[in-house]
Amino acid sequence: MPADGTGPQVRPICWHALSPSARDAVRALVIESRQVDFAGTIATAIRACEEGDRTNVRGLALLADTHVVGFVALKRGAAAPAWAAPDDAIVSGLRIDVSMQGRGIGTAALHALAAWVRENWPECARFALRVDDDNVAAIRAYAKAGWVEIGERRLGRVGLERTLALALREPAAGQQALRGGSASARG
Image: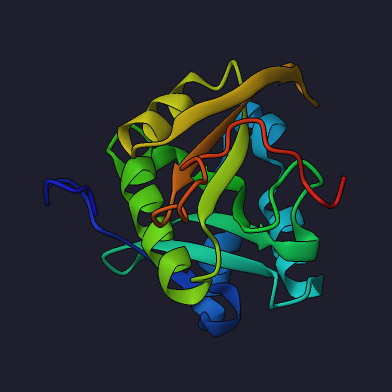
């Protein structure tokens, strides 16, 4: 939920804990073709969470009230991309149903996901992602949720990508809060 207590409330629920009807609702989400370019298909995200190591990959349905409004895959550790720091939690394709966009659902989901990571993956110090430079709506939602751009923009799958991050806990003495541009031990 947004810090000021207003706006929609979104709850993340693990894919593996969903009822069959809720799983069907995730599969039925309507995502614009341009969003699929940015984030990939729902089917790909579901496959990643079903086939991935549950310790390091989680698929989360996003519920507003009792309705499935989105889906996201989170990754960490060995499942995270090479650019991620060892203690990062990575957003891998946040998808919000087209009928729910423009209502603050994405921003509320980001707040709820940060809380989920703090509770379920407390060793993660930072939430990070890469977002395509042309994905203006997503960049706006990330900014509203307190994410900041770190590092340099790079050429990605669709075009230029920004790396954004959100600190999940206070850094240890002598560390930068967001470690902008830090290299990963995974190379």
